[in-house]
Amino acid sequence: MTTALLDVLETPCCRDFATAWMRWRGDEMVPRRRDIELSEIAQYLGWLSVLEVQSADEMVFRLVGTAINETRGQELTGRTLRSLSHAEDWPARSRSNMEIVGHPCGLYFRVLFDYTIGSSAYTEYLCLPVFADADGASGQVFSIRQPVEDVSLRLPQVQQDYNEFGEDNCFVDLGNGTPDSKLLGQNNPPLKL
Image (cartoon, rainbow, N blue to C red; front, top):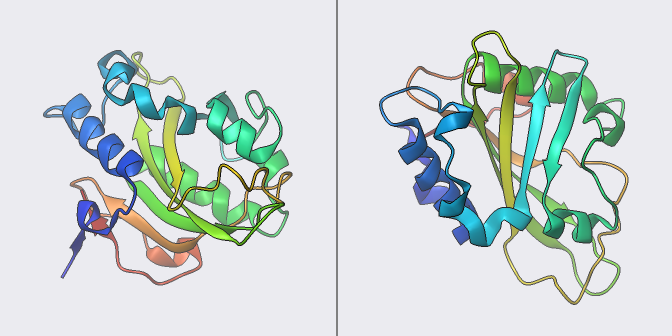
C-alpha cells in the first residue's frame, strides 16, 4: 500500500508547497514555469531553492532563498550541486535529480543538522519538478525545506559547505510510477501525491 505524501509531511511549508504545486500542474503531469504562482507560497519563499538540471554533471542553483542562506551561513545562488556534495554522494544525488526531471517524479527526505548552539534538529525537504516553458530546455527541481522545530537561535548550521545526504529518502509518485528506490541508497517505498 502506498502512503500519501500529505500524510507524511510534518511542516506547513512542505504541505503548502505540495498543495500549491498540484494546483499549478492542473491536468498536466508537471507544471511549466509559466504556471508557477509563487505568491501562493510567498511566506515560504525564504525556504525555496531552484536547481536547474542541465545534465548529469551540471546542476546549478538558480535561486536559493534567504532563510536557507542564513541557515548555511553563505550565499548559495549560482553554486553547483556538485560543489556542495561529498564526492561519494554525488553519483546517487546526480542520478536522483536526473530522475526527478526525466521520469518525472518527486523526492522527499529529511536531514539531521547540527547547529553552532544547542541540539541537532531535522529539516524536512520536498523536491518537485518544473518544466521550462520551451520544450527541450533544462528542467528544474523546485525544493522547499523547513526545520521541524524552531532553530532560529541556533544558527548557523555546523555543516555549511556540503548538502548532507538525507534520511527517509522516498521518491514521490506524481501519477506515472517511480524509479527504483535503490537509486536513493535506501529501500523505502514511494509516496503518492
